Each structure stands twice: as structure tokens, then as C-alpha cells.
Image: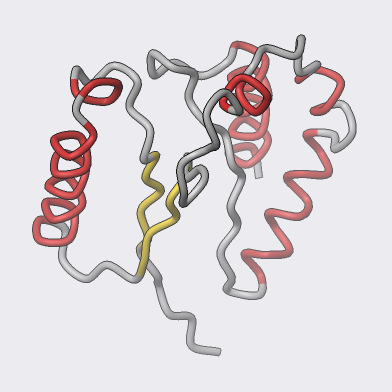
Length: 133
């Protein structure tokens, strides 16, 4: 069976640290589009992008931002990750690879670009199990 390689980028549209993100939206959009152009020209054939952080297409009605983006409490990431064990994730990964398909495991950065410590722990364990086989 011939397996075709596919190269895609994951790109987070949200960069809270960029100076224009909060105050100059047109400049910010130009900034991220320039980055996309660079990725499309400097890395050979690109089969696609996975964009993250795309929120509403239209503006909220005045005052509704608080309803959507207000702090609600802890996400209980440890509890969430305990729903699909590391071993189960690795097994799904193996099955997907056997079919020649793409496996996405979405881990988004926090506002300053780091990965939540619990997610780091899970990813390191997944990597360890994959390397052992």
C-alpha cells in the first residue's frame, strides 16, 4: 500500500502578546497573514492548515463579551485527561498510523505561549510510550 505524506501546519490565530492584538486589529490581521504567507513559501508543499482560536465572525452586541469570556472557574484538565488514558491515546495513535491517516491531538498554548503543566505531563508520557515501541 502506498502511503502519501501530508504536511500541515497548526496555527493559533490568537497571539495575546502581540502589541496590536488588543488595540489595532487591522495591523494584527496583517501580521498573522504575513506569517501564513511565510509558512506557505518557505517550507515547500503545504497540504493545509489547522487554525485555532477563531472566535465569532461578527461583533458581539454591546456588553455581551462578558457573558462569553468571563472567568467561570477551573477547567479540571487533570479530570479531563483521566477520561482517555495515555495508553488509550497511544493505541488510537497506532491504529491511525496503520491506516496511513493523520492523528491530531490538540493542545493549545496558554496566553504567554507555554503549555499547561498537566498537558506537558501527558504529552511526555505519550512520547515515552511511542519511543519505547
